[in-house]
Length: 204
Image (cartoon, rainbow, N blue to C red; front, top):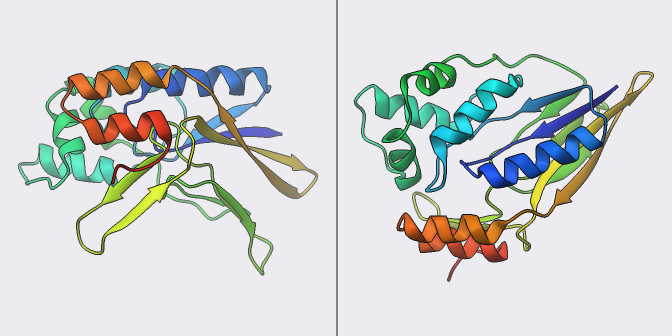
């Protein structure tokens, strides 16, 4: 069995399409999506509709929860969430609100950090973060400041393979037209995103 794993698309439809093509070529039997799908100054509603058509099992990331708080009348600290919330339609909102609950399994998949890693715990559980499909660097200024940088602009994903009872993970990158997405971010008033999309590094 081969399963594709994606996370942190952040409205980057060009990167998503490139990853989907790569996974199709890899012959995976299923694809799972770990959330943070649409927040960002790119193509939120278009990305939501693409994922709705794809029908991949998807969990809610922190940005989905923040979007639902905005929809309910709360205040959002993230300009990425506010950008997406202003553009989502009713179908996209309904899709965001209906995600899978977590289950126990030999493999634990997680996103959020945007950095790819596959490691095995003492109890032999495999922990996998596929890295980010759509944003390879960011700078967090709320709370304790920190910087995440993948170092290159390629989209990232992972493939899980099971031979018998043992799961293995391979981490992958695929190139896409990141310059087009960077220009779109600039047109939408997000030069920091444009820099990260082009370089894989957060702006100073």
